[in-house]
Length: 346
Image (tube, rainbow, N blue to C red; front, side, top):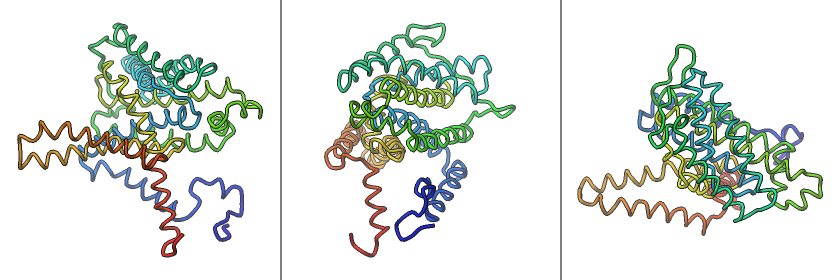
């Protein structure tokens, strides 16, 4: 029951979808996701798969950085741990629904080891420590030939459920979206629990959090473990999606990509991870489409416009940092408030 703009019960206040309008939008969105491969075509389905993988990984980094306040520049390396674990299990004919969680758990164990320095250092010092972990793990990926295939990489067998083999983008799409839905729902519920709120307390003021009885040792390591678990699952899905993986898939550039995604989307929000991942995947493709249209009339312009496209993309990110530091999620909130009060002004 609602009384004006107030919630009349605690359960209603904590509901994920509190109004009929929100529930209707969610039902429509789920239906769109289910039929998307049939109406979007192979190229858009390919982009949707990439977006799903990246939003899972971005959500993992958002848990570590956005909610717990621990800066990490080694997120791509955790994806690599999960990916190579899943690749090894897939070659042993382990089903994907078991391989993905195991890949996430192995990545979480590595994340705990990398997160140990967070107990003594923070800020830029912690960023450098995680950066060192990124380079160490990339070195392992390149040199451990018997497991990772070295610089040549490994081939990942397709995901399989009984006799159903997920060979195409349209088939693996449903696996990716199912994993994304489960993990995002888990993250959304996590931050309504004591554990999630302890992360936020550690981020805001770790000394005050400790005074209030929050175990900093447990909280920080758990944040790294959960973030790395998400990265490991995303890496495993990337292996099933690309089917051929090399260490070059998990470089520092990818870690920076995810850091930019959660900043542009909005730190410390589930919606921010979704919007940031979508922005980082779709905007470069849109700019590539604009360049392609221009080259129809000026074929020689490609050499000039390709670097300009990257500059525009970088300028957009800088623009968000300057003019909208709270990210796309804050823009979305303003739009919602406008239509909530329309036609009346605030």
